[in-house]
Each structure stands twice: as structure tokens, then as C-alpha cells.
Image (tube, rainbow, N blue to C red; front, side, top):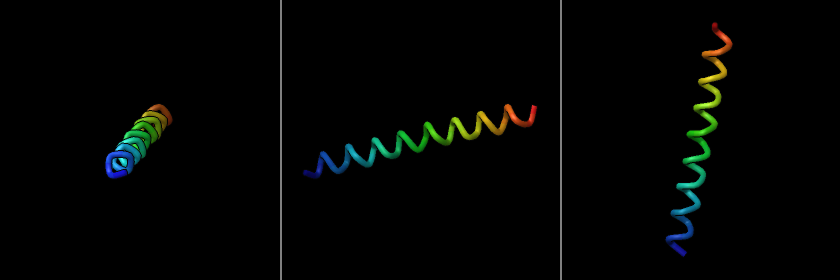
Length: 32
């Protein structure tokens, strides 16, 4: 139960980082 919840949090955190990277990349490309 605890492990499953931790895994879920890590999954969400990793997904958020991916979205942030994509957003930053898009902003940088938009400025060029």
C-alpha cells in the first residue's frame, strides 16, 4: 500500500518534470 502510493507520487513528479521541460523548450523556441 505504502509502496504503491510512493510509486504513484514519483510517477506524477516525473510526469510534471517532463511537462515543465516541454514548456520551457517551447518558450525558448518561441523567443528565437
